[in-house]
Image 1: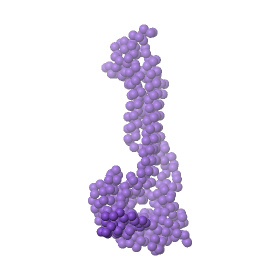
Image 2: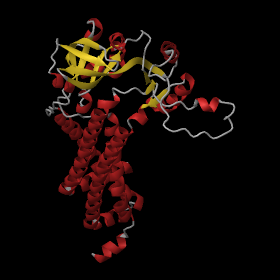
Image 3: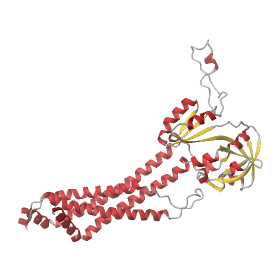
Image 4: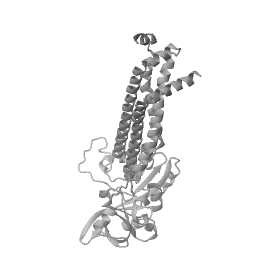
Length: 419
């Protein structure tokens, strides 16, 4: 009965000061709305930017790097074994880019429960012949099925069908920038020259566009079989083993483990793309900081409104305490007022935040470098709405707590005597 009476009194005080109540609720609504919209847009933008690279990057990449041998012939000599040997102009030895026993390595890694999938790859530097001009480029020999499944290759093919790489003999998909340099259209034949001087003709079956212009000016894709034929290598020749994990956080640990076990060089995605992760974290922190600042400002507005309400309702508070309401009861009344503002304002903020996000999501976003993106990116992560709702309640609670505490300590005798 007493709790019911407290709610009725709180409701009456809210309705008496309806304009001030609405101003406070609108402040919370606006703060939550902008918090949701800002976070949704910024994280959506992060996902878009990171996806340009991270979607196409292996979590762990095994490869062989050309480098000088750590052990020189003189070190093997018994006569000079216990001496310091200083050798200048050391050249790379007989090491090759090929990964030895690649088939056995992939078979062993595929049995690891931590691995989601494996995609073999060949990196082949070539020259594209444009009349008398040779344009430097790279052909990436890929397994099209695995590349599409693990690294979303199909999403970046803007013209043609990626499956033609395995269905059409001696075919190639050119980077959009490279195709524009060569004036090559789908169905045309381009001629390449390998580092050994061999010439090879390839049929263009599509364009690839990653969104990174400089990268698209040099890269192209062919099947592994075609690339091995271009390089004059056997069918077990591979330069890269791309590994995708079930948990990306394990990449640094597994890169070290695989490098030691299989005696190859290894690179994890965190190391390869540290600049992108740093940028994403900074943008997310800024978004949260701005959103929380908006909520805190709204909290100060509620604090000021409740302070004014207490000052204007001194008589009513004195009468409540004189008729048997304790200081705790008075505190509860004003806390109910503050939380009510937070609940109503927060709920409306979540709704309007969702609607505003959906509106932004429909705004056309057309750019030649990102043909697959048609509207501004928005992330509808439910966690943002939970954080916004909880934080609105916490902010309004503390905004009402201190005025409520002040109201609970009012001495009714002093107020009535003053009147």
